[in-house]
Amino acid sequence: MARAVPAVFGSVFHPEMPVLAYENQAWQAVRWQSAQDLSLAPGAHALHYGSECFEGLKAFRQADGKIVLFRPQANIARMQQSARLLYLPVPETDAFLQALTGLVARAAESVPDAPASLYLRPTLIGTDPVIGKAGAPSESALLYILASPVGDYFQTGSPMKLLVETEHMRCAPHMGRIKCGGNYASALPWVLKAKAEHGAHQVLFCPNGDVQETGASNFALIHGNEIITKPLTDEFLHGVTRDSVLTIARDLGYTVSERPFSVAELKAAVEDGAEAILTGTAAVISPVTSFVIDGQEITVRSQERGTAIRKAVTDIQYGLAEDRHGWLVPVVG
Image (cartoon, rainbow, N blue to C red):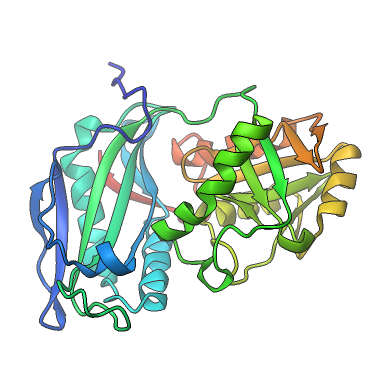
């Protein structure tokens, strides 16, 4: 029997969540509590000085009924990197993974059938209740994980218009590879402006003409048999989905070029028939349908290749293709 999912992405949560506390210089054993509320001191460091980061990953119900997590170790490693860069206590790998798998096991009946999934949101926050620590890190922390059944975020044919922004940055350059809420808030004024003035769905940040990413997704061009995307630097998020897409693209015979490229090259490539894609956990790949560059809308003529690469990734997630890279972690089934 098909399992219903909420109409609004990420709006309904499994009633339980695991919580791991870092106290007295050590990570404590996991405790399970209601996901409806969280007790936090009003002076908590995260609320005043932004000491927080998060992750997003999914569990999938496969064709044979088994439930798997997709690349959880990669998300754990990225959160550990974010924690180090924010001077937060670094979560322990084994306890983190056990909390993830334990949550999915408890929420097994909530894992939807394909093409939906169970979205997981680990969040790490600094909890020192001291507002005088503006220039010092939090020595205590909480790691908690929400689980939310979500529908298929990808819709073939849905428009995805991007405004190319060459003046403003998504966030402070040295913060780009940290997955923290402040970076999303930093991008929001330009995203809302683009929607109001151009009907754009997202902003592609290209400071000084250097093509980077949107406010919520990594970006790549597919020009013939070549995929072009920015190399890994501190300025943008090192996406797990980005890495998965590039790996599968290589398997399919694409040449992957991780290098800087300009808005001028982007415009010329699209006019020459190139495809453009956004990558991220929610949709895997969202094909771009048009760009607004210097006030001119340029149509992307095809979404065929990006859609095919997306299918190759989702076939692995749903057990319809072999997991040649060891990405799937079985949970139940």
